[in-house]
Length: 311
Length: 311
Image (cartoon, rainbow over all chains, first blue to last red; front, side):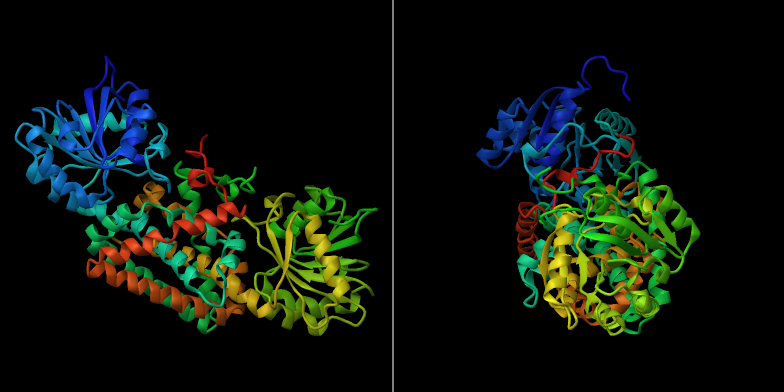
């Protein structure tokens, strides 16, 4: 935690004011980490919503206008846009400013942004491990980062002072910070986030395509387990397209392992190998227990979700 | 709903008093559907817990003792045990009794139980589409079946009157009832429940086996999506072993489709086909919306789970 004497940054610019961007804006404002917040957003609708919600003080169509005089610049758009935006805003970045991002992949982000960062400007990439399946500025909330991890991945141009400044900011937002090499981040997130999303999108797609089972049946009987997957599969399509395009190698590696393991289970089912199935199904409970103990999951049955939507 | 004048069944026997069995006992008692409840359970520990919780009036080691004089007998053990138990209890079944079950597969259940049902005893198989990842009698609760579906699968020996009696009972427990052919049930549940569980067990297993990513990293960063899967993967291993052994064909068929679709996504990632990924990721949101509208899921972000386990 920072020893606060006024805000840590006078002016913060959020590039892309969706779920994450607007949550950072709300949390930073609520906790007094910044004095002034600007944002950029492509559509007028998003800019109007952000202003109406009081999440930002000013909203611009072009990122170059939003970053003017900013002491902290946070990229919150889909990672595929980073290179172009970095190039666009570079001339307008203030001396001494800190640039960071919240992208779900890191090696590619460093490669896309770092070359454009001018001398005298700091850059440290980062990734908050938090979110929901909702999108847009109205979906954000100030508590999104509480008790979550924020991975910071220093690269060539990251100074130790800049890393400390970003760490203090993330902690101020409610998170714990861990440093990691960008390629290792991409491998860890491939299994803890990217493959889970891919598998969720896939199973929902498979169910949608069946002829023998109607969509109405899939919906009615989804409480048998399927509905859990629909949450991740309701995530933002553009964001996730970019994640898979930009973390190709780690995702393909993890996917190959997942498929191998699934083939082994398939074989056990085909040959009626109950012992193999039982053994496999027995070792997974312990992991959930540890996630609960680590404060990253609710111990309540069914995620504590209400029994029905009309509760 | 039944027009109640006293309990629908005088005595109910629950064979296997785990999550589902104890929830039926609690709900039936609370709503006055039965006057007396017995159960059987293999371990003394389970019998003692069930008695201490006040969920049942009497608990027996052998099912044949529990079903004596029972007007309703409900199989709530893993489906692989059904044949042996049906054979054991057959001589003790009371004339006019109704026998049912809660197993997650139905064709095999009909084949395992029906041949043992004596003349003058009714049999109608069933499956409540509700549950949690917890196991044992202490995990049950009376509201488990509220606003959920209960699929009833009449077979050769099921009389229309018996189907109506079971329907009234399930409705009394809080569920809506739908009739289905046993093989169709098995196909529907393969995609809405069995494959989701298999995939969840599998991804948790894959993550557990990695060398490049530590288990501690998987746990810390599980909020990226992975933790959602650990809920289904924390389900009872014996129950799920039996489901896969006894719904082999439908599961293998759905698994083949799932794997085909996943291979197509893998190919799109390898070749950088962003349009295919975006298209696939765009059509899945609508399904979650429909599940929420159908009252089978909470509309709250992140399942409405508390932000941290210590909330």
